[in-house]
Length: 311
Image 1 (cartoon, rainbow, N blue to C red):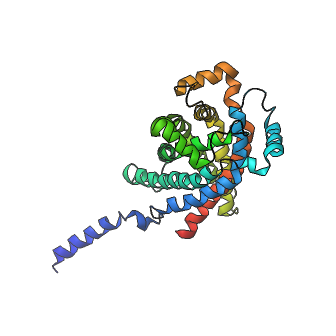
Image 2 (cartoon, rainbow, N blue to C red; image 1 turned 30 degrees about the vertical axis):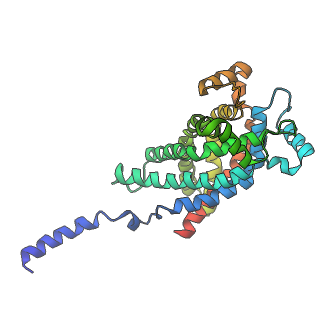
Image 3 (cartoon, helix red, strand yellow; image 1 turned 90 degrees about the horizontal axis):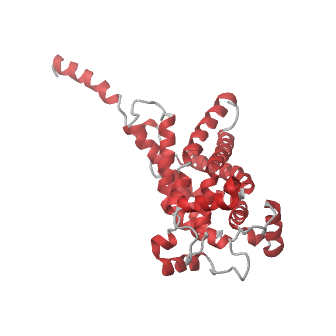
């Protein structure tokens, strides 16, 4: 090899080394977020479903049916027992596995794509990139979440034999498909679901803020504990901002299918305000907030633990 060739080769090597593959940077493989998300979904459903049942019933019940959250809990326990709190549990048990797999898996991959193509020179994905990835993940998972949440909501508002229209989740889904089709039936509420999940910018933005705060101010705290507290607190922030959109979504999903009261998201917003004022957008807020911390804290701790274990 000539001295000229050696000089060219020595100049060329560092240029290659400056641009390692993403896998060489220590990032988890692309599929891992989807696997870890399944564990998150199971955890979230088992912890949070009873709270969710109370929330949906308070959001959609007629005036005077319940005096408040505790009255809803007591009536449900007295008339239906523990099983009453887990009505409609099967769709979200399967659904949350799929939803969290899609949500957290797509979040992981959106972050990587944004990092690689928009911020390739940054060591860490900037805050704007993280909340953008969160918003895209919210929109993506809406296509899975809308039919699952639609079926769940209709089963949750079946209080007794008189109000029972569906025998179970499969019967509910098939009835919606048979009588109203895929778009107007099973996927009724897709746009409200996407509007609701746009608020993921608050969830994943605050999750990043809380995580960094704990790591800076409490360096002795175990990683799992950081994930738990950051996950619970960020979920609470999300629900504070997203709750009004959730009320509107639930109203649309539990509306009469044959003679709907609301034909659009805007009509549902106006209907809630006209009937209850601003307070109407926070019906059932207490059980939702009580649910948000334990369910999502446990779910995100499970997600991060699986990511670390399998990486």
